[in-house]
Image (cartoon, rainbow, N blue to C red):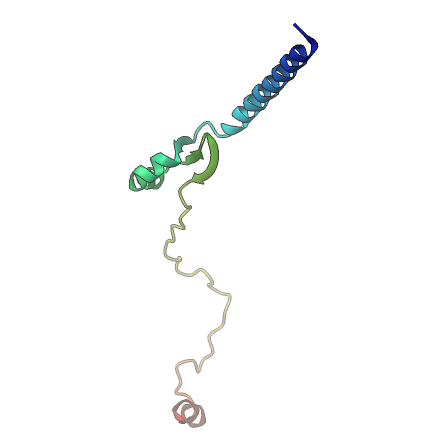
Length: 114
């Protein structure tokens, strides 16, 4: 084999080895969350309602394009608001004795002035 063919083979082997090393490292980063389902962009386009139903049920989904992660679908944390308990601010405020008294005439006229 001549030196040009040997050099070309050596470069091709190095290129292949570096590509394999990159693919192996990228593959390990790609699965950063093993609990997450992975679907392709084509699957999402084919059945968007089905995917959203899965997310609504609590599942997280990683969307990929050409085996590269591009988006993550996960449920939105909802605020389950419950009614405020009675007496939450008990003792923090004093209600004046004339709280229920009628307003003075000048204040009422201020509201009714046009």
